[in-house]
Image (cartoon, rainbow, N blue to C red):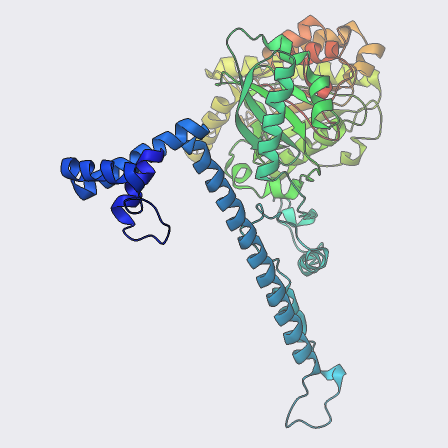
Length: 546
């Protein structure tokens, strides 16, 4: 290192004020310099000396040049970001000062050329300007801002939409009700930002790694009520190990509870659902006005709510064909039943759908008493409930005999056959009419007409099973087994999903399940045949296996 420095000084520093023998490089520099010039030339000798000098410096000081460049680059980035933040903050202050100055000028300005103008006559033109200037200043130094509607603007928007619907206008017979009869509520709530979701993903991975469970978060799906993390477990990791750590994950993530989705249809990942900081209220009117519900052609279309992505969920009861709803008191079960009933009332006329409602509590379904869709008044006595179910079984048998006579396989085919015959002007005579009966003068053999779907709604199955018992179980089992093709469908709700209420005969013939929050894992397995419903949040949070 000394020899290369001396030679470099001899080559490039010709004059030096210090008295040294034989010029600036000394004796060593002069001898090596003359030899290197003869051998490599001036440029080649210079490059060689620089390389030898820095190689010797590296060996002597043990300096890592790569690490040195990383330190310099990191400090440069930190300094540039600091300068950028300070510049953005300064620009924000200048902009805010200009806004305040502009508002003061507008407030203090006096109209010119107009005399005797009072303040009352001015319709406050400054409000829209202040509203436009109150938008937050977005800077690149911060994360994505939260979209929160100010309370004043929200109140103005709600007030502007409150228009009284004409309740006494002429309505055509058989017309469907208008969605304007329902309230329209639109409230924006705060959700997790992208940075928070990224941090929570890393926290989930780290928390599971602390328990020797290796997973990788592959996707995050934020929704109106919950946020789902899709995790890919490492090879050899059992789902049961992750499910057993649900409470530990809830504590690590500082949330009330988490739910582990063991199986996601069409994917090889495991779902982890955590509640949002603020829950979004699901508006029933928005669901009815959604394109998915409007495009649904079935008169038995049901709006069930929103999925984890915020999209409306619309199901067809005719394809289910029966539905079992379970959940504890206060979990949202009765609200769901009312939502299903209203969905059918907004979608179908009494000619399309008729209902039998059984309400042991005498409170939930009594408001529907008197509507034209009911085949019978709302049943509140459980002894009468058995008679209603017995009539439904008899009607099922009658429809099967009738469809067998005309040669169709289901109710849709029967109605299409009858409608086509009426359009041709050739109505079909009733094949089950007894010709031994004498017809009165001017009376003809009755003809067939279209048959409506029949929906049997039971608000509390456990109470009915407790009072009536085996008779009702046999009737429900017969309807669940055979009533699909006859157009008869069941909606059964219970708050006690135990095995003595949901017997094996009923469960085997009611394939569609809708579970709200239940009290234990055993109840969850009774309803869904899998765990997870005990970790739901309540107040409408539900799970429906596909």
